[in-house]
Image 1 (cartoon, rainbow, N blue to C red):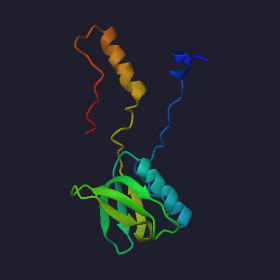
Image 2: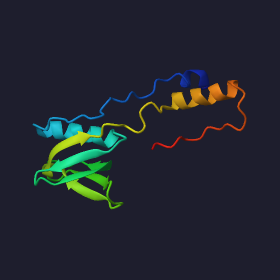
Image 3: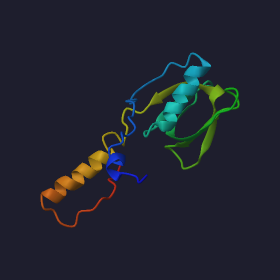
Image 4: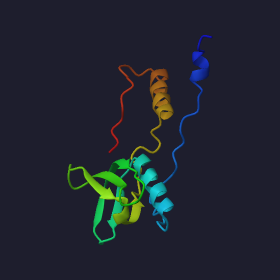
Length: 134
């Protein structure tokens, strides 16, 4: 059976949860795991307070889940360096999601809509190119 491209184009996209400024309660192991999954999907920075009181802020680009919190790690690029660091889940006391998601409102649909608005308005030399996030 041939694929109908009209049906494919109306497939719903993923809906992103509004997490800006969120400080999850990390009372249980499941709370920690869920919050760090959301941190991985978040497109802004995350502030991590470790149990020793030290704080790190940066972009969470990976997580490695193990059987326990001590063998599960979140991987981050701190805002203060380009070094990739690993933090065991067991060392995390608190999380805070940045107050601004730099990609909020920049869905593919919004991107295409802006392109067509410019084209209908008669603009020349327009192209589908990504906008700067910052």
